[in-house]
Image 1: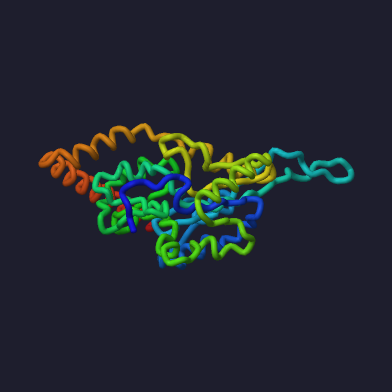
Image 2: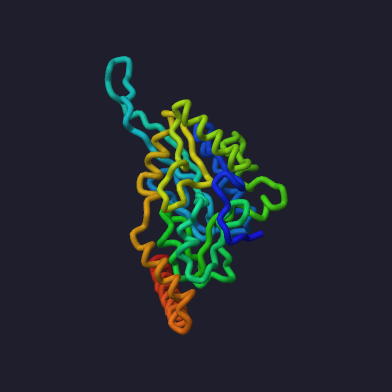
Length: 285
């Protein structure tokens, strides 16, 4: 059931991601795509092993691979340097499901709701494709589909509401994801933090409500993956204030709101057409 009042951070559900257990097999990525019925597509590798290079409208979970070359070079017995020692750190990533999601606040038509379980869900039937959610999201999660609407991870709300685990959680062979009541997950994350592990997802900026329902933890061995991945994510987006002002105009402005809404739809349609033409040109090269 979708509710208008945001559940507290310790209400609903959350996931603790223990990167020390991740082997980068991509079982979670495949399970997500399979359960949600997203179409197959030709993808490309990033400069590392990440494939596709980022989230897409059809890939709601992607395992990112980060490299750490800060350690000493490996040496032959003779003392000759042979190559730099490279550590690989996989990091499964999807919508973070913020406590107070900027995407929902920015949506001018209320197409993004937060459920009682804490899932942040886009209603594609209500989405007008304006792209404000993508602009407002500090994690760069919502992506435009071929139909002009935006898509992202749903926290497998359809499974959770039927007593099932999220597809990615169930598919993981090494127990990377710990799913449970938010209060218990937060407590477990705090315990890991107290033991010296790097934790991301607690005590974040108020822009996202102070925290997220996907919480990452790692020992020093894999901490570089968290640091690199979230180095430029999770920060306030400067345009958010103007988006929220516009939303209020649409909600309360009557005829003005209707005109603004029509304008948004026109801009969204135009943007979608430009993106389609650009994609066709790139594929024809």
